[in-house]
Length: 366
Ligand code: MRU
Image (cartoon, rainbow, N blue to C red; front, side, top):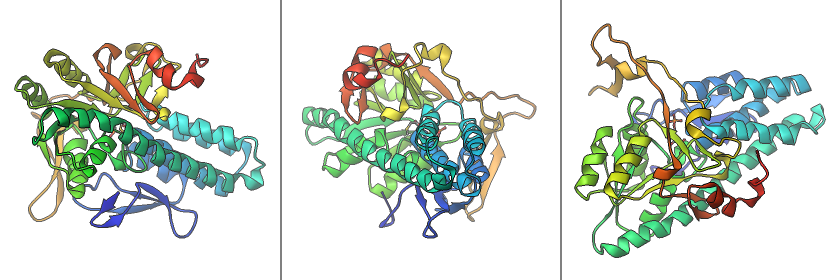
C-alpha cells in the first residue's frame, strides 16, 4: 500500500540483500520510521515491543529473523534453538508458530552450507503468500459490502472495526481492512467506525492512520461506543481480524472483540471475521480454555501515550496513583456469536464443517 504516494510493504529485505527493514509501528502515527534489523535478537525485540505486530506480520518477520540468524550459524542446533526463541516472543497469534514450523520443515532437510539462502527464500515465500492471501480475502469479503450498499443506495455503508487489521498488520493489504480497501477502491461509499482499541490504541493510532492515507472516510470512537451506535442503527456490519481460529470456529482477537460480538448479537448486526489460512489452529477444540491469552504490562493500561503540540511523544499516567492494572491483550469470541468467516478461499460458517468445506486438507489435523 502507499504512504504519500510511495508503495511500501510492512517488511522487506534491504538493498544490501540480507538485512531486514520494517516500519516501526510504535512511532506511528507520528513518524514513519524505518528500522533495519540485522540479527535474531533485534527481531525478537521488534516483535515483543510491538514495533511489528498483527498476526500475519509477526509470522513473516520471525521467518526473516531465522534467516538472519542462519547467516552466522546454520547448524542444526542453531536452527532449532533460534526457532524456539522466536516462537516464544508472543503467545496468542498462531501465525508466529505457523511461520516458524513452515521454516523448520523447509530448512531441516537442507545442508547447513545452503541453509541461510534457503531461509531467505522460504521467508520470502511466506511474505508473498501472505500478500496474495490478503488480496483474496478482500475479494471474498467485497460481496458482503456490495449487498449492504445495494440495500441503502446513496448512503455510506457503516463498518465498525476493532484493533488494526490493515496492511501494516500483514505484509500487505490486511485482513478485515483488505475488504474495506477493496470496497472503497470499487467506488462503494464506506464509512468506518474505528474503535480506539485501548490500551495500545491500534485503532486510533494505526487503523485511523492507514485509512487516512488511503482516503477512506472514518471516525475514531471510544471502545465502549459501538453498542450505542448499533442500538441507533449506525453500524451495518462489524469486520474484525483474528489471531487464532479454532477447529470449531472460536475466534481469538484483540481484547474487546467479544463485547462487540455480544452487542452485534443483541442488535442483529452481522459480525464477520477475516483470516488467512495461517491463522487456523485445527488442533484447538475449545478456544476459551486452550488458547493462551497474552498478559501485557499493567503500565499500558495505567498510562496513555500521545504527541504534544510541539511534536514530543509523551506517556502520562491516567490512573489514580497506587492503583494496580491488569492487561489481558486478547479475548475469545465463541463461534455461536460469529456470523461467518472470510478467508482467501471464500466465506464459510464459523464451524468445523464450514472450515473443512474450504480446507478439506485440515480434516486429519488433531
Ligand atoms: O496485539 P496486536 O496489535 O498484535 O493485535 C493484533 C490483532 O488483534 C489483529 O486484530 C489480528 O492480528 C488480526 S489482523 C491481522
